[in-house]
Amino acid sequence: MVVRAIRPLVDVVKQMAAKPTTVEFPERRERKNDNYNGMHKLDMKTCISCGACARICPNQTITMVDTETDKGTKKMPEINWERCLFCALCAEVCPTDCLILTKQTDYDVYDRRDLIKRPEELE
Image 1 (cartoon, one colour):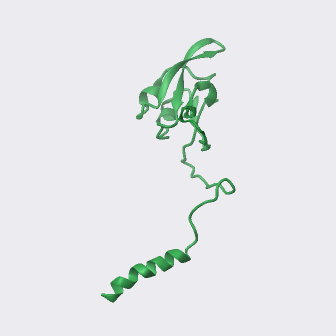
Image 2 (tube, one colour; image 1 turned 120 degrees about the horizontal axis):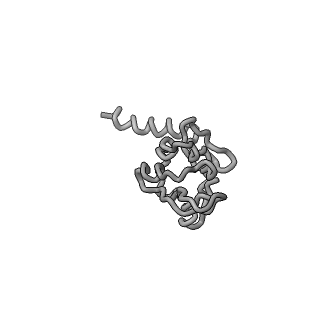
Image 3 (cartoon, one colour; image 1 turned 90 degrees about the horizontal axis):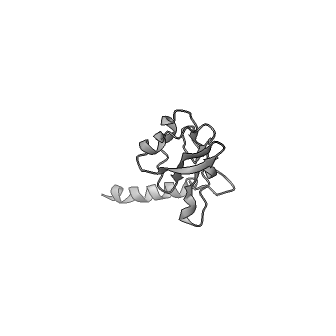
């Protein structure tokens, strides 16, 4: 009976002696795994406006909006990072590989509306 009461105290002492697990930001950045998905990047020149990325998105994060390009108005993806799961299905289904997910993770904004990125902002 006494051993059961002491075991939690032993665990607490072990945790107090362990190194801290938090990382100071931005002085030290956490190393990301190879399969980590961050912010989207769009190559507007190779996008063919197929809309496959918007159709496959499970969270309906991507909407196709009219965008002015060199060749006139095209439908391009607009991404709401607030809703995004970063599952990378949009990048996998893209036939021209114009939409990719980078390792960048700096989402520091003051207004939630700044998390909705137009195609021009994704370049």
